[in-house]
Length: 162
Image (cartoon, rainbow, N blue to C red; front, side, top):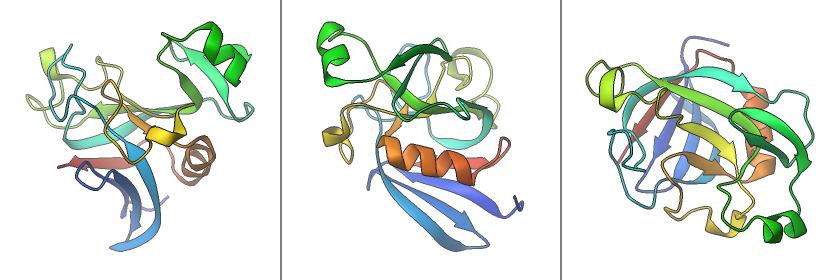
């Protein structure tokens, strides 16, 4: 990957764009936090500013694979599984774990994006994509999540803004 490649996440438009050398390569609809923007731990808000992809998790697993604590459970999401566990905050397909790059804003202490476990990940509730509905993470349609995962490397910068 080139150093000029980054992800641009617009909270206002609920979209994620892959930008390379100033050109939009791909655009996806997303869902950010229903509580809006914010960096504080426990706020269930989406953090803003510059981040990087700290880790890519789930390579090679099937579409709709279920994760808990960043580990695959061995389950594949289905409507039936969803009905059995209606209170679960589903993390599916792949995880791009974000780490803040701005000390005092989204890195270290009570505002650390990594320690808040903020990810870009797949979701079963694809009807909510395009609307703020998450607990702080950036949710994507599962096919889009797989496509994005295959296009970026760990270390790629991510800019999240209102």
